[in-house]
Length: 290
Image (cartoon, rainbow, N blue to C red):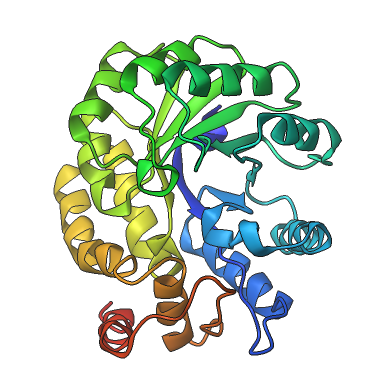
């Protein structure tokens, strides 16, 4: 899966003031990511507020991104959830033409044990039409997917990568040290991407790349090429912003920065809410820092 090496961006879904989807803004954001150096686009992930989009809206977002992308970058589609049977149904019935992989989050809310997580993904593997990227984000799911479980899953042929967003570098290193050669470890934490890549990760699925695609994807590219001095310089240029966008909810933070850059509005759908005034001022300052 060479398509998944480098910088993927977890695309937002921009909304107008009436909370309808702003397809013009989405088209502009896709173009900015392509010209800015991103390597692939992730559609309908958490950052895309997929949990609050209807089925028809999801189809419309996919169509918009496909049209704007025009085959220039690989596309990854988010299909996940905490009802295994429903996720399997979606994998069997969703039109995945034009996509190279599925990003599927570890089941949230139910808090399954490690065997439950393993069996969930095993069930997905039995029906998936595309390779799967597993996604460990315990801050959202309430349950960490351990290194041992991820390494078990890495042995399944349909599972080609993990998006690791535990924030636990010890766990990350355990996975990298013992993973199959062709299994990719992808950073799910923008601010930890450089240290993860120094340990052997293959890249990132990023949020901050929306605001600084040239600098952030440039940092990832420098890591892949072993240009560590350049990578460190770019890392520290973007690090404060990479942390700040999550200070009062995501994607509220990144939408504020993009609004300052004139790319989209700040609207998010409930239960999300725009960032508070103090954080907004800081994010608008940071949007103009590079």
